[in-house]
Length: 209
Image (cartoon, rainbow, N blue to C red):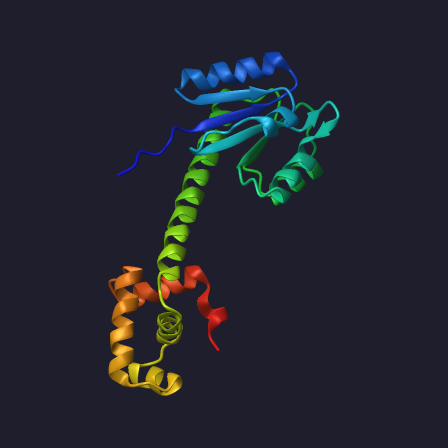
């Protein structure tokens, strides 16, 4: 069993004192962190592979945290964000939260409120990474199926019996039974219900003729 890489909290704030204070807080509870004075330095950095989140100041020189949030989404960088600001307002908060932010904290905020938001963000990223890993494994197993086995899988999970699948494909029921067995083994499915759940995650409904 592989050990997951440690979590990292990234901090982007143009105020060095704020960065230092947040990093000191994180260190006191055993959390690893990296800080940056601007979004560009963050994008240039080599980010570790473990769970992570971003503590991001809304107002930065020459940059806007909300715009950077959109930029990350456009680039396909999926990282939970906690916004911090000294000039928050309700419309800004609503906009940030609708775009997927974990929390929007107005300075000065309580240390515990920040830590709670960070723990929530890291938990969300862990779940997301686990789901992505499981989906990648499913895709690899699905790609190991022959074209005919994929056809059989799509029809079986749609609710067809072996006899109906055989009729649909113009083959014998015994052949379908053998191919269905191959599908179950290659997909590592213990039951039809589990195979149906796998198909739903792979979104195979679009493949049904």
